[in-house]
Length: 389
Image: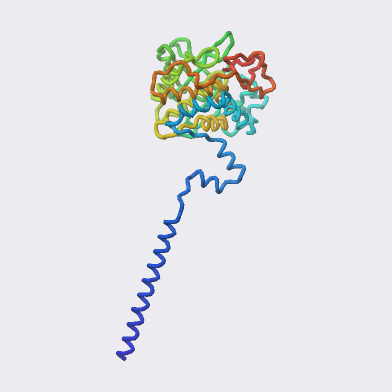
């Protein structure tokens, strides 16, 4: 009996030893396999798993450049090919253009569009709450645009026409927007660019159901700040408007300092709990896209080592047509970043970024005779060409 117990005990010990040895061998093999694994960057993972068409989209929608190499890259590219910026900008021409636009084409909405070919995509358009007496009153020529932190951080919209001013304020109220950015004069070169949508003085004015009262107006060298009180029934709130007044009638600003200061100033005054910041020029694509791109870039550069101007413009054009409307505006964004990275007082644009006369005649209505050196454009405004820059 004792012998049987001893044999059983010995067998159990042997079995236990075998189990331990097996576990040790398996653990060692797993460790060896881990050591042999190659760490694959996220971009490489995309390249492996994406279909060819989607992989190409990833490769062509982003062109990041390290901040430490940005200035050298610009100088090198300009030396090798004076038209490289034109080529890069041209590749953005058709981005997003195959997306659905139906609401803007409805006959009831066509008169609400300032320009015949600056129309909002359906998927990103801002929808107003329909008025009780008008089920077709949900339309406004405006799109949500992603910012650095939020998917709907901005609303890019056209300058209101006379009969859409109430819709503009209704949008501001419904979206809980507390900051308005205006990048045009009401009139430029003798042409209407934007209907004045705020009171002339401190006397309150009704715009539809919204009462707007101007509380203050402060004019600086390059911009004007206004504060409004909005009231709707028994509720009220304050909204600030920042109007940049130093954008020239033709082309882009000659130096970058005022634009960079303006972007930073607006960013400092955007509250965390507010709704989307409303940005508009005349068409809501050119200067508007330039401002939003700079705001995103300045924030991104604080947290990252790369700059991707092309990628930001590409993404914006998936939400609203023609964002950053001209090549000259695209160049201006690059010059702003160059000046910022060089940490010097911004001066007139350097010769490293060659200014090339450029016109994209992608719209049949474009009148090339009305396009001059300082004002290249992608579209025509009916009935006057190029009046939305």
